[in-house]
Length: 168
Image (tube, rainbow, N blue to C red; front, side, top):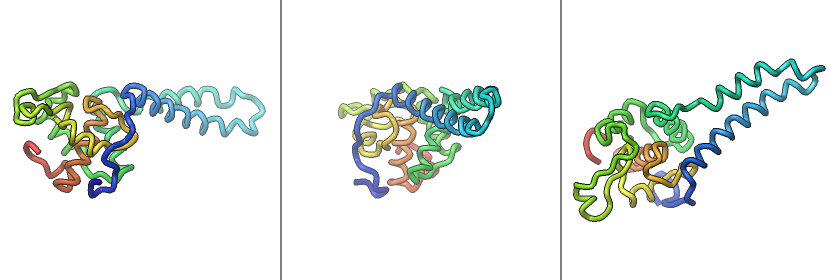
């Protein structure tokens, strides 16, 4: 087990389904909070405009782009005590994959051994498996899962992704 106390492996999750479930959970929470003021109201129309606006905002919290992936990963990292800054993550992503979540390195020593580096932060499968964080997709090409696993590894090995300035 890594020094951070997280299990080396967790149950596989379907990438898109897991992301949708997180989104729906956030939307459901927002709707429940908005429904509370209705308990004493004389008409249901009192909360209708606010409910529509708040639920829409909750669903679009993380855009499906590099900025959104980093921000969602940082939220998960904070929940698990994994250090790292937006700038440190972004700097390493740009060096490793230029922001392409489907990037794969088929030419280095890892690839020659049959374990090519994959995803935004170019993680090999054994490292992804060892540092995967529960609540993220079990898929090294999933941008959020890749970022969180790589930052978890960097924290264990270097103290933080912020301390990584080259191949790691």
